[in-house]
Length: 318
Image (tube, rainbow, N blue to C red; front, side, top):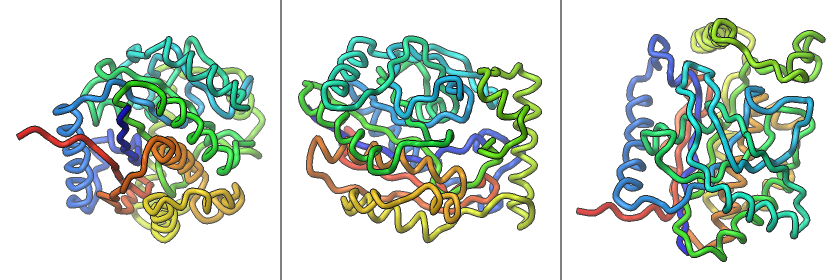
């Protein structure tokens, strides 16, 4: 087998045209980085994409919240006006992965009707230009709903996923799609009862409610960019330390990260760093590699520490 890795921040605010970053060079460099990845992948497409991503209470709810879930089918939600489509999921491979993980002490959930939101849609659209083109194994990691799997367990889970693919005769691309430090206005423990009830009842918003929710996020982003508002600003040093550990292969150091410390230093959305850790652990289980951080910048308008890193991408043809 052969393997490669891309980890990238996502922010749905990337999709809001009227909220372009004040630092236009940051926006340009981030998109240039993704276009470069896309060109590499077009020149030598992977056989399958293993996509680690969180959910933002659009597909997974508190009625039954798994720590990890693998889809044999997956359909996108319409949050942030993203297109609705069925992903091109390799059902047999996904099911084989689930059985492999069960045999190694990971009681991962399986979904035969997974709903995935912008956490999976954005990387597929930016890296492949399509929600349908790449063959995908969608892997959900709970990053938003307390209690979450520990960073240690996420690392071990990613490693077990990597060991499965090490035995496959496939060209595999591992993607980790999650923001680094950021503090979005996501419902959290202590939210009003009616808010929590919607998170239990699998409340799927209609288009009007999606737009109202998103308008609130956009206003919070504008306030953060102006240096005001309730959101915790992204933390460059937290991001740098975390990325350095991954790039240097020191994944076990991340075992000591706690939810309380992440909340305090990286914000409520900083828990999405788990998907970077899972993807790096999967890659590390397949081969020795050198990773490169290709972009990092705090983009206040996107409320997020935006980063992109890769390892072992195929060479572009001349």
